[in-house]
Every structure is written in structure tokens, then in C-alpha cells.
Image (cartoon, rainbow, N blue to C red; front, side, top):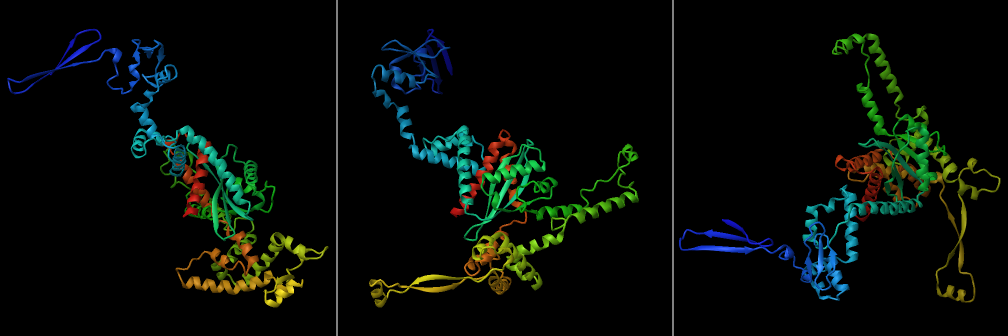
Length: 540
């Protein structure tokens, strides 16, 4: 039972009465609440309030110093300003050992550790697609204070600023990595998010000096222009030149959209080959074969009747027209991707030539034809400079076949007692040796035998890795010319799956829970996510 009695304007007495079953026992407890001047002293352990008195003004929170009678504003009765007044004016320093300040200083993390934890937190936000303010939610903060007292997670503004810095660093690292790459193939595609903002992605595929295939996102950026062929060409060429790889591009794999096909006519380089995505081709074949995209004409009478019998009212002429349209569509879909299938047939065999299983499936006539094309390509693109140095002036390297060159090299003799004596008297201890460099024809002859034998071993043993790059890695010294050309063709992707994978990731980043995410921030997040994944793969 609780009874209250008002004793004065600034003091209230609360009487707590409790009774028990025993009639002889009756207790009464009286609690006197403090007045307004000392309000909060029971719950604030700071000794600063021994030197200050709270003001009665409720609108403006102030405290009056008992020593100099100066009024100081406080925010929510915070003692920070009051403590500075006592320390600076009255030279009272012993109050800095209060419980709150001591606890704050004791839990404060070292600066280097705080920065390292902030970097790890930002990487977790990028890698897991978290919201920027995820670590500042009450539940997460409570967990941090229990697990790691003193850790202050980065704010969303700090995360956004850090994203831009990380993007600059990652872009510079990417440019430095691509400097040593001779050839690179890219994939291209477009994507639209929930807010109808368009994005363009460029993914690169290349083989390094260790014959390892690498794939990465080169650029993921917002595309603000109309999807016309000249605009697409201008943006692609601009981004590739910023990466200093436009002259190294060999092929671009994309879908069969007319604006993408037309963009190749505006490139400043006319030797960039377009490869239509095989996955898109199969998709078109299936959809057209099943007639999923065929629109049937409906007469006006059917529309008046509700259109329920629209399919039944089709005439024979209309059915024949649909069948003709379907057959024409299927005829246009060619696995070669160009107007003349015979032109791309040799290109497909070129890719198959450097794959062991593809080489094994080719006939001798096909192998001979491909080898002849390889000789011409090597002379025109790869070996032109090397051959011109070997030929006399006035000769054309394009009309001459590679020759066996004999080079004179000096090899030092072993240091025997006699050779040591000759060295002391000033005799030359070097002897001339002749080394023979392999020609392209000799490498092709050796490749025929070695490739067939290795292909048979692969097919007989299912556990053997079918990656053709392992073969070229082992035989790069015996067949250096063909190994160099293998990097040119084996790095070319047959599908634009890597671009579609980037769009799947961007769709998760731009989910409806993150509808406020800006387009620029979305693009930076997808790009950095790919770079973090590459670092993780390299570490593992």
C-alpha cells in the first residue's frame, strides 16, 4: 500500500505501509525525495555536482558554479563543460578520476586497432551487401560493447567516403595488373535496376604468364545515354582507353542486339571481333522453336466477343504466315553469328585447335587448313616485327615463311686448372656455340603428336583435368610460338555469363530494402565486391 503526502513545495514524502498476518507487527517506511536542486544526484555519480547547483529554469538547462557564481549551459545535464570550467578556471584536476571518465578512457581502443576494425567492418559491408548503417543498430552496438568494449563502428557517411577511396585504389591496381597483359577479351551487357536506371558492365578475360585464366570486372558504371550504337561505342572505347587496354582487345562477347552489333561499326579499330553469346543463341532457338514469342492476329469480331475464341478463329493463311515467320527467324539464327557462316567456321576451328579435345576431334584436312591460317595470323599480327628484324632491308615479311635462324653465342668454359692458367695470362675462355630456334612448322608437327597422345590419356582417365592451359603450361618451352597464340584464343569466352553474374550481384545490392542506394554507390559496391573476391581467391 502506497500513501503520499505533500509536505512542502520542493519536498515530497512517500509513505510505504506494509502489513503482515500477525496483528502485533506493523511497519511503515518513509522515503523523502530530493528537491529539484539536487535532482539527479542519486543517479549521477560524478563529483562535479559538488561544485555546481542546477538552475530552476526548465527551458534553458544551466548550472551555477558555487565558487565563482558563473552560469554554464549544459546539454541534458552533461558535465563535460562543467569539468572544463573547473579544470581551466579553478585548476581543479582531481575530478578527472570520476567513474564515468575513467571507464571511457579504460575502454578506448588504440588508434591503429580502431582503424583496422573499421577497415574490416567496411569490407564486411561490401562483401555481404549489408546496409551502410548496419553496424550502428542498437542490437549490434550492444554486442560490440560486450564483445569488444570501446569499439565504435563506422558511420554510414564514413562508409560512403571510404568506398570512393577504395575504388580509386582498386582501379589503379587493376591498371597496373593489365599493363603486362598482351591480349584480353571482354564481355559486354546492359542491365536496368528497380528505379529504371541503366548500367553497363565490362568484364575482362586474360591468361597470365603462368597460363592461368583470370576473369574480373573491368568497369561497372551507370549508362545515362540512349542505347544507340554510337553512344555505346563512345562509352566502351572511352572506358577501355582509361584502362589503357583498348589496343589489347581481341574479341567482345555480347548478345545479338542490333544496337550492340551496330556499335562495332563505329570503333576506331576494325579488327575487334564480335562473338555472339552462345547462351543467348540457345535461348533464342528454344523460344522460337516453341513459338513463345509469336503474336497471333485477332479479328475485330473476336475482340467484340471478348477474345475467348481468338486462336480458333485463325485462318489457314494466317497460320501459314506464322509458320513462315518462324522458319525465317530460325534461319537467321546462325551459330556462326555473321552473315557468312563459312567465314566464322575457320575462327571456331582456331579456338578448337588449341584445345586438346577439340584438336583430337578435327580431321587432318581441317588441321591442315587451320595451321595455314595460323601461319598467316602469326606473320601479320604476332611475328611481324620479329621477322622483319631477321629479313634484309627491302624484303617483305608477309610473303616469306619463318626461317631457321642460327645465332652465335659465347659460352664460358668450365674453370679447370688449365683454364684458370689461361685466364691468368689473358686468354679468352669463351667458345662459340650455335643454337637452333624452332620454327612454327616444327612446333605444329610436334603439337600434332603430343596433343593427340595427351587427348587419348585424358579420355581414358576421367579424373584427369581437361583444362588445356595445363598442357600449354608444361610445353611452353618446347612450343613457345604456339603457346603464345594459345593465350590469344583460349582466353576468349563463348558466353557472357560473367556479365550476367555481375548483374545478379547488383540486383541483390539494389534490393528493395536498399531503395535509397544511389546509382554511383551501387556501381562502386559491385566493382569492389569483385576485387575483394579476387583477393580472397588469391589468398586461398
